[in-house]
Image (cartoon, rainbow, N blue to C red; front, side, top):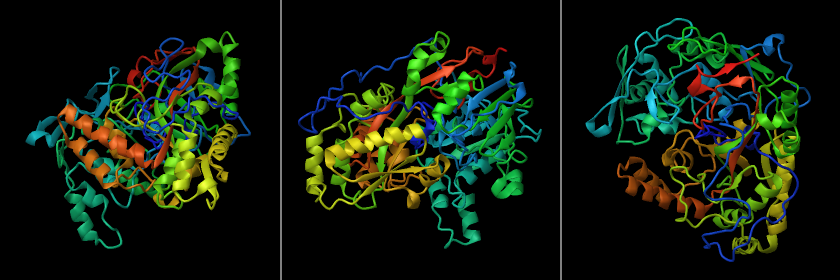
Length: 602
């Protein structure tokens, strides 16, 4: 997911702004013991542990959506008069979501709204085990695991009372793969028979009849009102996890048709989930009301209000003014939190599930040269940034996955490390000794005041090592996410990230960086990497599967289509009035897996 979704639901490539847990300001100051050679496996990063993440203040909780930045920076959210009671949860959406269309979304700030309104066949329980949600049971598998057959629970309805059937799930998946929809996560369905052929059809060259034939050939079929069948090209150990995400959600065909381009407005945005979107004041506020027709009953929190506050400092002030029930904390806020007897008790720190990176458009000069990308990667002072700019709110990232995640390799990889001397040599080898002839480059990022300070520090550190001319390119947050969704608009150099959608290496290596991915917009292509990921995706032997992904991970690090930067650590303030929450990295929103335990006091 792009920032968030993974274990922090969603992978969203997440833009840097999506997670206001991004902390710190100032300039770099060392922080690392520089190694002599890139091949050195261990880089000493003082004060940071490779193995352990930490937590403070009770159980903690991932507040999905409360960390995202958003709209007018000059004004705090004005809470409705009734928001002080025990029925309304007040969160910050940050920016206006680029979309809340389930078949188009990829960013965390989009997905958490979607998953309040819709539900999928499966879900992860509080132990992160797959269990039935709208399905009556786990599927019946046949044909060596290539056919999965689900039966829906009886009596399922949408929030307006219309019956939910297997046909709605078939429609959701075929719309997910529709080339005209061009959803970011379409490639996640390519394991389904006929899916890639349908999604990759050239709309300018394919007739309506031929397009219908391709659609009909997609291996998702409603056998009757309560039975849905998936026919896969190969056994896929990871695919069941996809059925617990927003992929293939049962969007209503009649309402999509009726609403057209604006079907996601409240009047036609009708789902089968625990909440109903009742108000959307664009660039200002979204409101959700509990769905009395939800199959397990309306959740006890009757109303969820999202403000849209882009500036983290303004969101922090809104929390202090009792206008928000949860907010992110950054380095600039930490002293105030630590010194306040109430705030210090409301502070929570726990492991995140996102990895941020400096991305390169690999088909744009000079980033089409691998040595240029490798030089920039070696010039990124990851430890110094985390220590001195983020104030310790993160873990330096020398490979893609955070420590402890399935697909993280503790000792087996030659990682991306900070090495100024090597960076200078690589840039010279690329044809730019002492940066002579190197063009001016823009560093694009999601605009807010604190991000500006962080990006100034990053750019300054790269200038000092490589002597290159980097200028900052701040972009309004919603426009920034939109740019990163298309290869043709992806900036030459940018900061983004990825958050886990489900706990499987496929969700990282294959979904994000393979050539046929609809998520990655770096335009990096490597046939051997694609081959290894494909083998890993289909392999049932755990040891063999792990080795395929390990080899792919090494290619990714060596080719450096991106320079991995840091892994997220969540700092948040959560009001004492929120009761029953817990840390759950696979939640899309606060309380998703504890809907009936999460309550508010006055």
